[in-house]
Image (cartoon, rainbow, N blue to C red; front, side, top):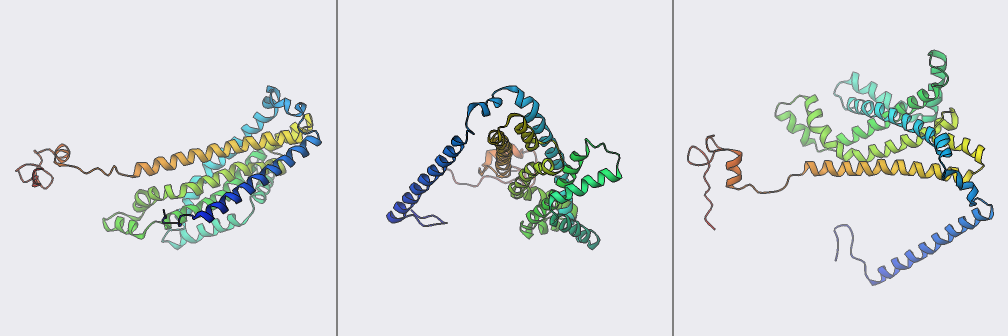
Length: 309
């Protein structure tokens, strides 16, 4: 049976795919076995190195405080970057040059600078020109860098999502007398959100991961830097980094799963039931007492002229 996207596989193609799959599984098993034996030979799989994660001391002293700071920085950056990116993206679509050009300059400027450089500049800015304490400066610098960079990227996502819609959507709104801001707010943005959601979630995952840059350079006590402290105390490098990696995977997987559920819900809410309304349904929606074209019965309404079944 053929599909719209590809032809059905023949016997030779099926045998070839089975062979390639088997070779891949064997190669993957060999790599995993090599990793396991290498770690075992160097004593990295001893129970004493993994035992701290069974007790609450490692979690309450190192992992949980670092995870709290990671979530705090990521949440603040998301809350600020999302609306700022939407505003910049819409501004780039403005008909007014004095709005469109400055927005384009801001977006292209911050999108071209590495986020780590923005964090370093932010730290220097807060140290020299503000009264923020030295304990809070790393958090402010990390959030500032994440907001400036990711807002610029999100602005391009919003702009691309709106431009991807058919031009007839905006033209229909203008044709019925809607203003441009109403067309954008009531027609274009609600329809483009579903299409933009996967790209937006991908950028939010980037925000969560980029918080580790603050710990590596700015001494921000996030999750990865807490792993370095834990390694210095327990001496379990592989075990600590593995635990941190699993936590990051769980965070980003949860975020992606929630976004997938939200996208599916939005798509379902925009679909009609597809049911055909009969005469009884029309009578419930428009009682006989209401005349005109939508009434029923003989008082100026539409009668059911279908032949009996």
